[in-house]
Image (cartoon, rainbow, N blue to C red; front, side, top):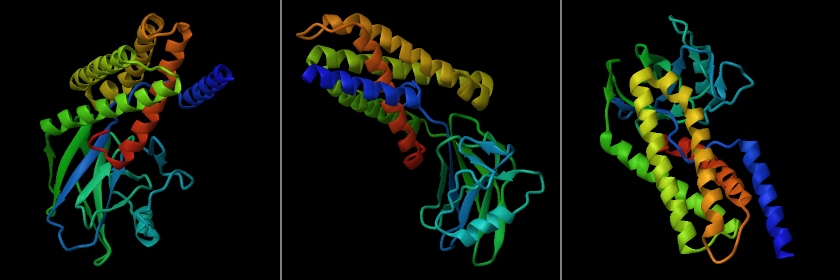
Length: 279
């Protein structure tokens, strides 16, 4: 009965993995962060206007995903706004009155304008056109309408450490579901994930530097993720049967790699919404 239950569990997890598709790791998700200075004591909302009509789940389509920050009246003001250069509102706003920070952590626009709205005066403040300059692009937007790029090397190191730690934690939990226990097995999983995280992040940074954020990041990201999944599956298929106190079929390593990477990818998407600067 235990073997049957384990096989059924593996099948369910594999089905979930195929539903999500086999993206690997809690890899870096592109983001745009904006620090807003000079707006203290005011109520205001922010968005990014996009050169394109849609990106990811966000678009101009009224039936697309909508984030109205709990204020339908303010949201309608953004809907009615018309940009002189033809940039589009993608139905996503945040109330920045307390945090003075705006973050778009999942499929941010590549070319955009920052747009603020102040309900007390019924006024908008718009920046000039900007392009994402890195996978995690950070800006400072001032009350006079000027904007500056901000570089934070320390935050990139912290982001990498957080992603790697969470990836390993999720994949070890999945390992327990597969009854993959033992110091040697877990050390292998940890070392493999650390190695693939380093290679993934390094390759992305090189691609961004050479080809820009869209072609360099989004263009190569899928190929890198699939390559990471394939590499991990190959390693696990070779070494899982040799490690531990019991024999295992080779296919366990392949199925585990697909399920573990799909699970960590799903967690990464959720974390990208909550902490766009880290994930």
